[in-house]
Image (cartoon, rainbow, N blue to C red; front, side, top):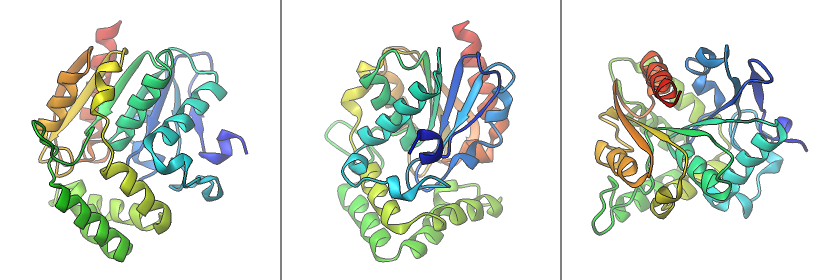
Length: 267
């Protein structure tokens, strides 16, 4: 099966233009970029896609071994970039997809001209000298709850992840997205996400990188975003005028403007 069908790849914009690939986070799909990606279609070959097991991707392509680590998802991403023949590509990754982009950039340093990380976290569990926002017990409890009752977990957690309680429709959209996901694959990806540790990869990223942080992010707090920026060799840190973990939905104009400013700074 080719990557177009496997990952439900969508490409818009001039075919000869530099590439710009948008990747979604846990429990989501490419529709989460619908308010941001179109802003760049006039001058980039804009690509959105679904990680295996999410959105309209091919569920039969899920491989427990390949997709048992972030590297498998990074390999999928690199196959998309190669198959589409993208060049001078900007990668934009939300949440765990930011670390998928890191793995891809370390695997193939020439794949991306720049990276944009939206609310990234290289490790969710606290460690000596590092604050990830969660204890090991909290993450194990979260995963146990997800395994026991995925739909109930989704209904409870999605509004917390989204934030913006005064706009309940945003939490409802994320809840519905979670609930459309195959629970078996969601549970696997959750373990890959919340038990991963990408800290050692950050200093290996050669491409200039924008780190976007928000206020009141329950998943990747401010201290984590600043850690990511500090560990990257060529980083720009921008704190958005936005709240919650999904500014691509809650504050798309601010997110787009920050990406625009970063790209302009690169010339």
